[in-house]
Length: 129
Image 1: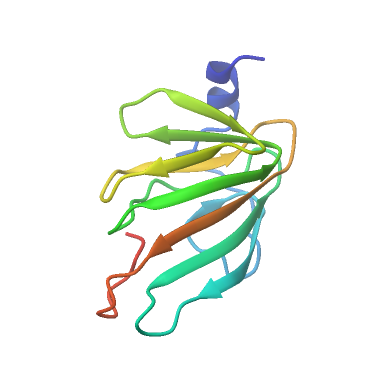
Image 2: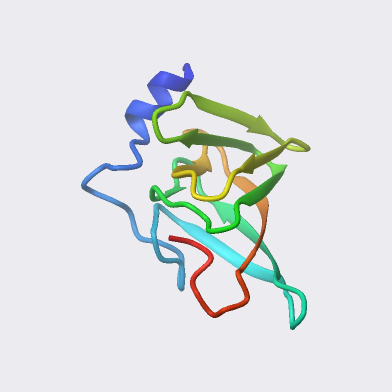
């Protein structure tokens, strides 16, 4: 099955989202996360280990200071608004620039885990919008 076929079956804007893992907002399908690091001043670093069930993904979103995803296992699909779907595998690292709308999630037929890393502004504003 090609990436276009997976996109059709795992549409990030579908109207019938599955349940989300507890505490995960703005995701479709089953998603779980653990905080690995939440920096204390002066650090603004945040790192979360995020696990996606097959076909689960985030909603469209952006990050005020960008985001780095390091794929730990499985196949990650990433798409910037208006761009092609990118397939990343274990060991790959993807960077999304500040303010770039995108989604990311698991391929149709397998689980995926990534380490999500980013920074907050330090002023209490949300890092994800």
